[in-house]
Amino acid sequence: MSRKRFIWIVSALILLALSPVVEASSQTSGKPDVPLFVALSSTEPGKFNDLYILSDGGFKPRTSGGYYTQPSISPDGQWLAVAVVSEQYMAYHAQHEKRKISPLPYDIRLVNTTNFAVVQLAGQPALDADAPRFTIRSEPAWSPSGHQLAWTEIDVQLMEDKNRELTPERLVVYDLDTKSVRVAVPELPQHTVIRGLIVVSDVAWGYPGVAVITYQPGGDDDAERVALYSPRGDLLWEQKPQIRQGFTFSSAIWVQRSDGAYDLTSIEGRYRFDGATGVRSVPICLTPELYSALAPNGISLFYNQQEKGEGSPVWVIAVNGEIRTSMADAGRYYHSSGLSIAPDGRQAAYIVYPGQGTQGGLYVFTTLGGKVRKDNNSVDGVAWGPVAWRWRAVTTLAECK
Image 1 (cartoon, rainbow, N blue to C red):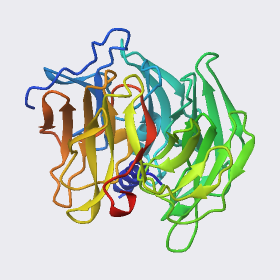
Image 2: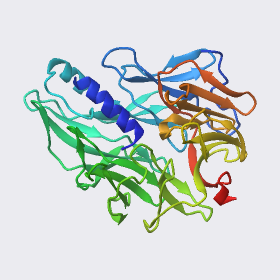
Image 3: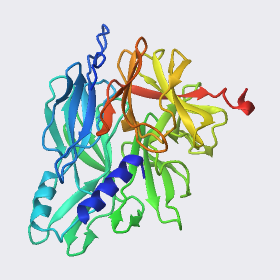
């Protein structure tokens, strides 16, 4: 279960009871002019986020309604994919408070990064007031080509004091070219339920295939079942469920190796799974490094893997491979929605979550101006230019020198 999913589970439980800024878009010739998008928390009760762009004039709204989550940018930088809390459900819940669903049902939408047009891809079933049925979904994951999206979903019926799952969890693929949706895997393995909260599987789509992380009951910790499917739904490989593999509070990502092949891992890089075989290993003296897919020699972000403060690895910022500064005084287990790099590779924006002696907020780093903290702790997600991950050699640990 990722950090973002954990936040939304907490939000569901709650429901149940600027200084001048740097230039916020890339002007590099031949590269998309994508502004910095941020998801800002709403101050209205029962509302969540809307999407804004950050410019010299501050935060400018680009969506309305208050039900958006954190955005994910497409590989070509033209679209944001966003899970949006169902307004149909929120209206129903306001009239039937005893009928609750957890986690909240998501619709899936696209937001154009140029004209900010919103396109609905997946909504909710027609509402039957006597037997209300909703669909809960994971956040969507982009295909490497940017022409498809994948997510997991379950149909649930609302009942007094409990929910009834009407369908097994399924893996869904949406094709942007044909504007069609299909079920790739009609029945995923049984998932865990935490205090009545259904924990849907997470999805990460890479060149080897569509990885699905399913959380299954495993004693004190939920076991993580890691499996890889083809876009058509064929099971390519799976690993026996095990606990503490790094996905519970950290995004699943695909990382390119020096030989061009890909590994599946989490942002903290605890274990890696060979994309071709599924064989699990510990990445020795390697750490995942985020960089601009359009400017690979620009800014990069990664764990320094050197203990500091309260014992958390420190995230650092590098330019052309050379470390410039730390992202914050103490490390966090970052979700991918809290990290972004401009298309030209000269700027980065990231979220530091308050706690453990760290001053939270939105930070923007530029290669020329350094690091600037924005006085706003309500930023829940950021998206800028297309990004990718690669393995970086660790040299800060004695055993790696």
